Every structure is written in C-alpha cells, then in structure tokens.
Length: 134
Image (cartoon, rainbow, N blue to C red):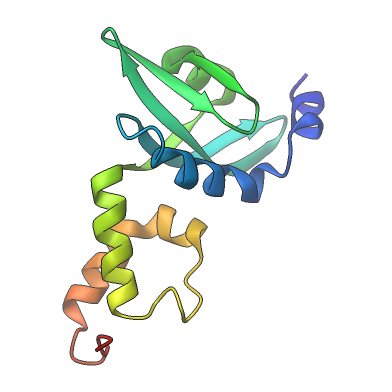
C-alpha cells in the first residue's frame, strides 16, 4: 500500500513545500508544518498545512488533496514535525532573508523550512560578516 501511494503522488520531495508556502498566504489561519513522512520503507521530507477547526487539529496535504484529522494522518504516515510556522513568522523571515540577500544568493525553500530557527540564530550572531542590502 505505501509503495502505491508513494508512486501516485506528485514529486512530494519538492512540490509540497512550495504548495504550502503559497497557500498559507491564502489561508492565514493555518500554519505550515515541515517534517518527515514514512511511505513504504522511505522517510521523505514533507510539508503540510495545519488547521484547527472547532477544537480539532487537521492536516491539509496539498500534494494528495487531503483534509484529515492530524492524529489519523500522523498514524498513517508517521509524520514527524520538525518546524511549524505561521503566516506572520514567514513574512518576517522573508523580510530578514531578503535584507541579507540570502534569497538572491540561492537559499532554497526546503532548507529554510527545516532550519528556520538555526538560520535566524546564525544571522543574529554573524551580522558583522553579512551585509544588509541598502
């Protein structure tokens, strides 16, 4: 079953991060969760949207067109969350990354989603070697 599901998905390793990043701006009450899912014998990086409706946590998996209770999704996919970001944090981070030209230098979305806190800590510690854009 896991192999069939994995083969039926669009390129989960790439598109899910961009889908969630884009749709979070359209659905600001949600949060973007990045982590790992297990399909078959593979552990894959994956992003989904988290949404709380009537006190129940849901997962919106845009690569599968899936809206499901978070507890069931985690049971099915063994989803391990690494980072959860809301719209406000993403906007602040994008401004910060743009100020230091990191997006222009090729910082990709997936590493940012996985290492958001570490990147911000490094930026705050190393401001003397990084130049802000004028």
